[in-house]
Image (cartoon, rainbow, N blue to C red; front, top):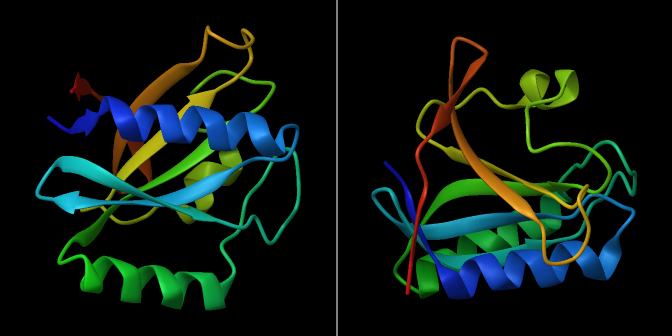
Length: 134
């Protein structure tokens, strides 16, 4: 069961609203199943319904995580106008069973964001119980 700090959740929400209606995206860092860091990425696709990491940004994120002695354990992206569920596009790229995939829905407006965590095995996403800690 993954955990995430409230500070990281707050960063995700701020980041998602700052570039809405474009999907926001980031790497999540930490150890094991405990998310404690957030590395915002630029959505190279610059689209409202799809995101893509820039390879240069990915390399920089790996360096940042290593410098902080953390691991890249998750990927987050927002759904500005739809629920926090896997879209068909999400299913196409999410293929690592070791990664926590988080989707933040902004569909219900500011203050009503919905964050969900998933694991993917054999291209099938499974909802994970997510615990927010201080």
